[in-house]
Amino acid sequence: MKYIEAFLEWGGIKKDAVCLILSGAALVISIFDLIPLPFDAAWISIILCGIPIILEALVGLVTSFDIKADVLVSIALIASVIIGEDFAAGEVAFIMQLGGLLEEMTVARARAGIERLVHLTPRTARRIQNGKETVIPAELVQAGDILRVLPGEMIPVDGVIRSGQTSIDQSVMTGEPLPVDKKEGDEVSSGTVNQFGSFDMEAVKVGQDSAIQRMIRLVQSADAGKAKIVGLADRWATWIVVIALTAAFLTWLFTGQIIRAVTILVVFCPCALVLATPTAVMAAIGNATKHGFLVREGDALERMASVRRITFDKTGTLTCGTPKVTAVKSFRADISESFIYACSAGAELRSEHPLGKAVVHCFQEYLEKNTEISMGKAVMPDVQDFQMLPGRGVKAIVDGRIVLAGNEQLLRDNGILLTEEEKDTAETYLKEGAAVIYLGIDGEAAGLISLADILRPDAADTIRQVKETGIVPVLLTGDHENAARNIAARLGITQTQSECLPEDKLRCLERFQQAGEPVCMIGDGINDAPALKQAYVGIAMGGIGSDIAVDAADITLINDEIRQIPHLIRLSKRMMFVIKCNLTFSMALNFAAIIMAIAGVLNPVVGALVHNAGSVLVIVHSAFLLTWKEKRKPS
Image 1 (tube, helix red, strand yellow):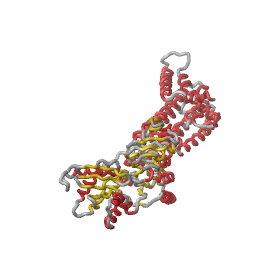
Image 2 (cartoon, rainbow, N blue to C red):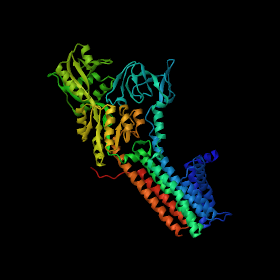
Image 3 (cartoon, rainbow, N blue to C red):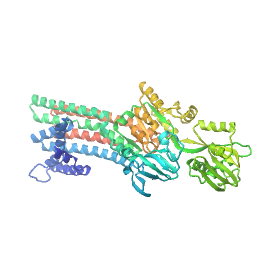
Image 4 (spheres, one colour):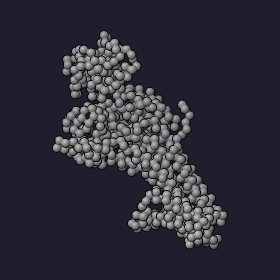
């Protein structure tokens, strides 16, 4: 048996294509008698296409007593040969293998698209041994190895900083959109990004827990065969085999015509029924892949079609996850806000801190829009004596004035105390989830800069389109109520739940689903993982999402472009429509052909052509899903 299995596994699409070409040519020679041969040329098709079918049926029966379509096809082939209908046998084998090749090509195209997307995590790590730095594949990192991470690099494994200071973008882990300062002894996580400053870390979690291995497992699990509706079709196929054999025997018994019985076996093959669902699912997965989705299993798309609510995490999902200047405030009447802005940008000009870089970048955009500012020139101010003060901020001389830019502790260390009114002003922004940079000029508190995450440019349009599909959007966020309401109002979301801990999100999803409303959850961080697992369909942001969130989700949005979510919803509904059409067509065709076979209208040759042509039509119909996109009128 192992030799038969090895034969079946040998080759691939190219081998099947060659066999089909030779078999097709042989059938043409047979029907038109083009070349005189000592045997019917149809035997070439029987051998090249029919024997693999028979062997596969034999393996299924012997190893697990698996009665599927191949069993009935094999019986039809053998019966056709016994009564001398060689061409019918060759035709059945040829069209069955043609249908199988189309399905295989559909699957291969979908899988190839998935493979091209697995380029998101670091494939190498910088290991330090005996003072020397060596670049190694990330999967070879061992627990206890010392790794060096440079600015801008993604951290390859979970570990602990042993030397150096930096700032880490860990929004994928905590949902916090602003970077977090890290020093010696602090933990860092795989998938988070080192913003500035190189550091050495000790690897803690490696191997199968790495991001690369997670993505490989995700690709391997993209199997449409796990869809529930596929199992239903398989069960139907098993019963059809039993019914076909019974019908063929009774027809032979009452008519005495063996050819009618064989025709019934040929047209009763449930090939189109079995192919109806997996081809549609895999074609839909291929379509989803081209729009940036990794689908773990076809069942996820089936479930997506019945979703009634979509709950969105805020940070990194509806927002960009990067800080922007949202407000500039002056504490002194003699200093303008534009002057505060210019001084802070000048002080942060040489800073490596992400918040400092954000201030500089936003100020440069500000300069492009404003030709004059209160300092009298639309250029970056002159900066001297820059000092980076880790854990505090920066100090510099900006246009001859001593400027401090950082946290409250920096001002306090330099003898500057904030008034209650100034603290209240800052607290207003802090409550909204913003980060605050205090500014001191020439020994006095001068003002502050507020930085916060901003909405994705396509977030509002995405929510609008989600509503158009009939699904209700819901905002779940850890932010306080005012911030949540502000974001929801700007997006047109009427249902929100703020200050959510992971267990709060779980309870919210449970309430919806107990009320008979299947829920889709979209998130990116570890704090979203429980909800992603609980949801009827979980979608993780793959570009910035944590490994745990991706593992918990059914679908991963690789490029983080949430504007593709409405397409996924419509695609899932379209997929279910195609599946229902395929099943209806295949069953109707089968029963119509059976009636004609019993009446003697069809012979094995014509019956094989009609039935297997139906299988091909089902596959072609499903294949249209690969390029399907709903035509929508411009809004």
